[in-house]
Image 1 (cartoon, rainbow, N blue to C red):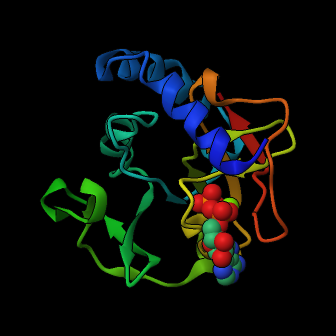
Image 2: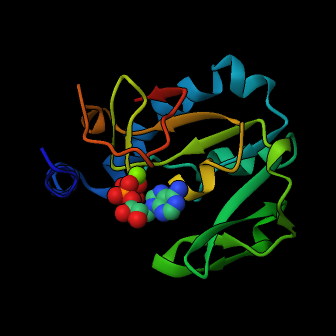
Length: 174
Ligand code: ADP
Ligand code: MG
């Protein structure tokens, strides 16, 4: 199956759920993430501010902001740029309606312990399918951080198509 077809298949699966149902399913996925030893040990974590069709990260971000250094991606000139997040006062709506932090820009990629990565689909080998712009592939090749993909159960496939430039996850939680 091609990437395009798989994205269409995932979009169709998502449409069977209301945003409220997806928020509900997210709870157990976030619980598994919080129980992860790499997550526990990490001091500097890159999270993402979820859209209504993604695993809901908003409560987690608020919970962690006083405990760990939280980084959130923004899209600037076609690439991911990281900003520190300390307070909801920092947030503004960016491209695609994503809430982006306007906190200090963070470029010390070697200091990132963990990146929590959203995706359209993942497989057991850690392959990831994004929305088709390659943002995370270009960002993740700059860091040695541990990478955990998170997704709804219906986004986890036996095998997903991938290319040379696709960056694999170290773990996938679903
Ligand atoms: P996604 O990861 O969002 O599903 P793709 O893997 O299909 O999207 O990548 C989309 C495009 O991004 C690719 O066709 C490629 O041109 C570009 N791309 C991905 N990774 C890199 C990279 N490391 N350097 C330059 N371009 C890249
Ligand atoms: Mg890719």
